[in-house]
Length: 190
Image (tube, rainbow, N blue to C red; front, side):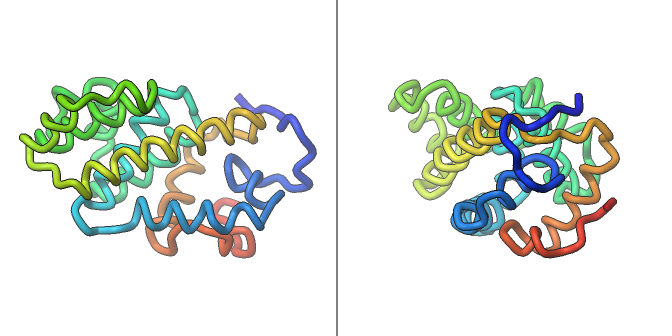
């Protein structure tokens, strides 16, 4: 699975980290956006936010983001990897709230096209307890992950095939967040 980036990044960081190190000026706002969207605890929990990102990354076939955010969700869910896997493949039967199921439906529509979202999708989410903020954040998380996924795969970022590296980095994200600081901090497993 190891692949060479389409451009010379001048570093060996895997995934989006290598791309961010190449352009730290664009990395800063992307990291800030990720922190706002994924670490906020108003409305949706960080676990729910990461599950939405994982689900969209899986739909986009972005292995790096799917694995990375799945591991972060797994940490927030006390190691429940089975639940994370079920959200990826069959969220309608997963042991999650109806609210989250309706929001994952919404995220899947956003992944296809923003115009795929209908008034009935919004009504269904509200019927299941989603607030306007939950709906807003779900749409923005899904849209942002489409951008992040295309950024990683469009430039053919390095993707570690060794799955044991993902939990180490996930723990670091849970503890310190997203952002440029990771470019200047010793990375787990290196």
